[in-house]
Image (cartoon, rainbow, N blue to C red; front, side, top):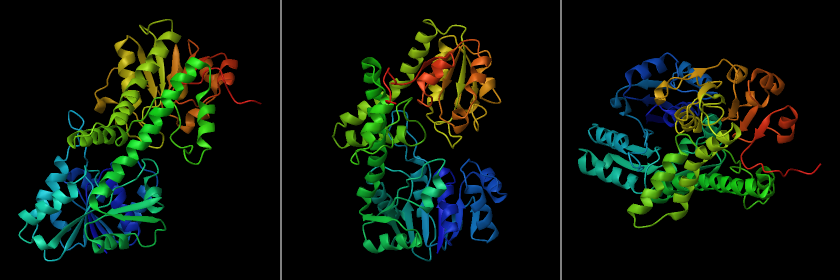
Length: 437
């Protein structure tokens, strides 16, 4: 089949490349001409394991193309909208990029039917709006229909998530349209959820909001553990063995970040508000997450004698999670700002992220490895649980430091082992408990 994918960010590029991998002819469209020229040369704008290899193979087989013109969507069977929907200044989903694509589509002179597939995360009712707009504004309104197919790709495992999904959700007002989209994924063994567009749109938001709720919940439990002397890792282990709860997303630490959870929780709060509903639980979830970075800095201050003025802090990890170079809403950004505001000096290391000037953060040093970040530091803070940090020579880290404070923001290390090495160690919700030998 023939498909166009508009937008070449994390979602759009993975979608386009993987659709081509499934055997379809795909053109990826983006108005950023420099990005398109780089993609034609095989230069990716993002880091995503496995994507480079598939892109090169599909391009070599002449099934994958790149264009900066929406006109290239003409003659295709499907057009995926996969542009960004970031938060606006107050937290609602900014649909300006989606609206721009839909408006441009309305001006296309189509000679064949085009099924528009909304891959962008959009508020409930957006697909209905888009189809209504196209039918009112287009010269050939009968050519357009709009369906919803939300993405559930995790950065760092997006290619595998596309090829081996836990489910594929397709929302359409006509079952025949949903079945046509389902045919695109022939060969993928998974469960399909065929529903209406409004339900499909809400499935995406509800999924992310629920996972964010689990993260905030276990972090609240961590706060109780610290006061009660319990170990949140043991509490989470015991909870996770209950099949109704599950072990995933029960890791206490510095909270969630990235391009999805923060914006989607806020967007759902405002969608509820616009519908006259007060989503109290989700408001609390967002509030808890926001407070976790403050809690970490307060811990650091206490461990370093009450203030950070002139203290040297080594930061391990800048990306919002391992396996990606994405720093959007990363806990590291808030920690750095708060540490610097209190007079502290930061030296950071991340396996992929080598600078933060794009995020408006300057005046900090970057190390070449974890030991360089620890060199002369009064304290080391583990922010992102990269495997490289798990395997670090901790005795060497201790020797490199001027001080001995280690704040484990992801509960990676064993408290007794760290204390045995001479660290003043503290995790998030570790208390004084632990597994019995």
